[in-house]
Amino acid sequence: MSTLVVHESHWGNTRQVAEAIAEGLLAGAAGPVTVVDVGAAPSPLPADVDLLVVGGPTHAFSMSRATTRQDAHRQGAEPGHEAVGIREWLGSLPVGEVRPAVATFDTRVTQVRRLPGSAARAAAKLAGRHHVGEVVDTASFYVDDSPGPLADGELDRARSWGLALASRTR
Ligand SMILES: Cc1cc2nc3c(=O)[nH]c(=O)nc-3n(C[C@H](O)[C@H](O)[C@H](O)COP(=O)(O)O)c2cc1C
Image 1 (cartoon, rainbow, N blue to C red):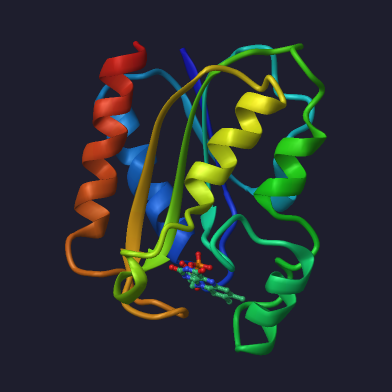
Image 2 (cartoon, protein in one colour):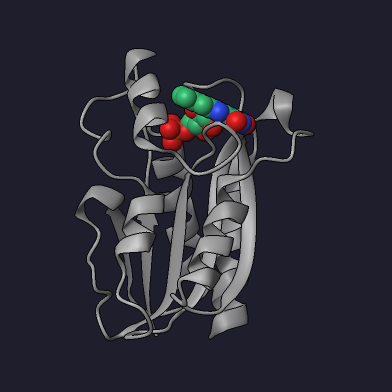
């Protein structure tokens, strides 16, 4: 089984989570795991991808848009990530050609964790609507503030989530 992990990240927090998830997937012997920034993610999906893990930051209660990515940049995020987010990439995938299992994740701010918005849930809905594949799980990981850092223990939780995904989808 081959896994593709696609991340969108403006300060690097979601990227760290993606890498930790990939470690968990590898520990679960899910086969080769490729981790890629959404700006370089393939469309269409390679034919051998059985599991697609896709994650991004929650922006304005959902997946980012061009305007929120520009806001992140204005707030001091790394340049070069404004052009494309997971919303645009998922929407660009040709319908039904390769149908992997799909798992989505996001990063969100701990203080507003009771608010409903989640990029992971929005990405899961879009993946379902767009027939990317069957959504098997969704998870949120928490940062202390918009630029980060990740809250204590979140990278361990991300590794465990990757491990669990490997065993569920093997
Ligand atoms: C424009 C903008 C809107 C945001 N909206 C939300 C939000 O609705 N809920 C939330 O929990 N965090 C929100 N955040 C915080 C991001 O989730 C946080 O910056 C992100 O998790 C950091 O991950 P990254 O370093 O991978 O970009 C927002 C951040 C920005 C820049």
